[in-house]
Length: 371
Ligand SMILES: [Mn+2]
Image (cartoon, rainbow, N blue to C red; front, side, top):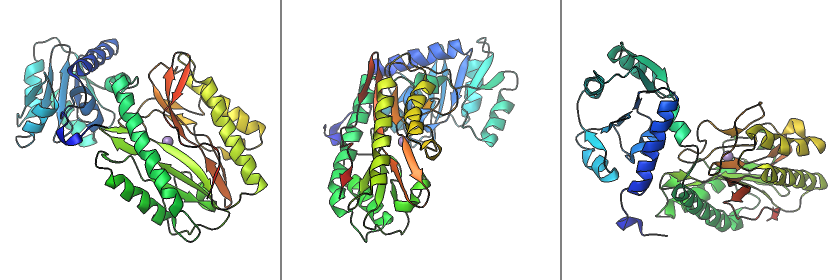
């Protein structure tokens, strides 16, 4: 791992940032968006490298401008290359001046733009066709080797944290205690940005709430405990779930665990470039259904991951979808079975789609661990 104290404030090479700009402009052209006016943290970071605020980004086929404040201007210059940095007090007015007379008809804004901000944009650009655009989200779907290497580093950090925490999971400790131990270990990794989320610690009968927030339930002998955690490194997230048993599992717990593990393997085997997203969900769900537990697999099989834990636009869902996988997409594969008031099992790994299959970024033990 490199020494982050001396690292370049830019997380990616100039060549890679340039390739992102080219791809974003290709998608804009395909979506008939002449200018993109962005404010979203992840989209601005993806296109420009700038990760401060205030922030606004204008992209057209010929220009790219980052708008920020006077105090944050030095960061914007340090974190970007070949991008104009503006501290114009009236950024929208400046954008209007730049677009005037250039033949621009359509302006794209993000789905996440607030109602108030949207009103301001519509007012400023009343003579243009202002539309919601997912051009940058589309460009973000296929990851580069460097993006994948950051996610691999984030995953290695998460695995070390979970390994170190296992000896502390025993009867009498609460879900919140386990969460605290994981959080503090992640905070102690100087190179890590932060926890990717939570983490989620779900003991025993709480498991049917798939996103249960850790509470004061104490671990009891014979509990299954789901730990769903991730680390963020240089902006990129990892996401892993493991189900641990405190003491000895019952026969049904073993059966459910084996069913989830095999369902995940069915999904791994189904993943390859060109495959339909929905078919991957079906591969896992059919196995769970055959074992009689289909009504207890209550969520989609997985989601895209990258700058966001749930990266936009892509998932392995229950709904029919025409989306197909491409090499370089990074997805979670996380089947689960949750029996209300009894126990639940989730096993979650992150894979990179390849031309003939997938590569698992997770190497943590997938067999049932008994503590
Ligand atoms: Mn996940």
